Image 1 (spheres, rainbow, N blue to C red):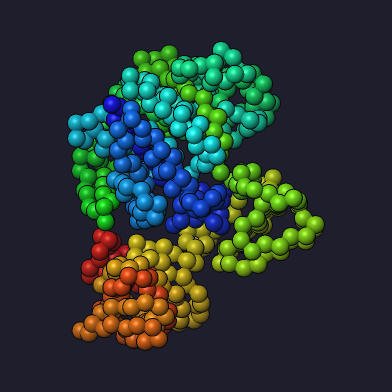
Image 2 (spheres, rainbow, N blue to C red; image 1 turned 180 degrees about the vertical axis):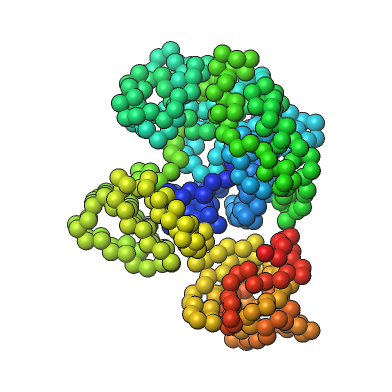
Length: 492
């Protein structure tokens, strides 16, 4: 029986999908198509690989420290086995990320086949995806590197291509029951070259999905980029581990990992493969794939009304055509406009021409340069214990709506510059307020003086909601001193 370990690469910030995608809540955790996030969809697709010929392990998630609880909670929401999360202290691109996964997969003396996929893609035909991956697994178990090549349906200039001549382009993978040797990887082409690739039929989009044994990756990396391998091994050997619920968090040494060269899988290994001792094979994938890299791609995959508009939320349109509208918090109306992207959130609105949707990243760059918080966090901020929504703010005061999940608890903490008033609006709160421990229910309240050690917990079986009113000279999130924390967080 073939042992398989799914690997979900969960890095990236999705800047071209701002203002929904932000650094603190990037696109892989958003529900852009259907009821589940792109990350959840990736986990479900990989879970569907289990069958009589495969022993499927829980997935390895490679993500940043700041997203570890998002990943664990979203897996819990879909009833998926909680995974081991390999936490990158700093982003170093996909080659070191895959190396961490290979080291983790072989730590107990095993050598499974790794099915590696980014977390921020969508597939509209999952059965075709499963079939292609199963074919790739069978070949990878023999020690080969197998990449999934997406069958193109248009001349796309935004993707790299795989050159893999097939016997009959009209029949595609039906004419090739076995993976096809890759001749070359080619860079993103201009439009004329992309049209030529589409006509020839021997070129496929490189979607960053590949399958190989853990040992195969480590051997190939040792040949082509031993500097990446040795630096990542050094950080891995000094790793630390802790747990949250049934999830395991593994942290390579921060100082050593920062010294790992940043490189993609393609440049580090795959592009060296053709003609080497580590040849690359390809399985064609025709499964309705999209990387949802920008808002025009989201419009392409969503259902349309009779006027060609795709809309989410409370939207009314008249004499308007081929628009994408995403309304998160209020009614959005359109009159006499076409080919626009309109994205409404609680604290920002984007209006863009669909043909310029790639340029949204320039807005994010300006927000970052001006150190505006809108590039990083939404008004509603998710935490491992629940979330808070900053609903009002002025000079020397801030008002938050806070939800605490059942049996969850905030850290034991104090603030140097603010006092807090808490009013329970739903559920039961257990509150540590200095030397007192209080139980408060709906319509009851308490006051936390400046400098008082305090904690908010939910001992009940339903979510706890409170309104928090802060007052003081400084109301930043970094005014916090933690004494105890269930989730291993440190004082900022």
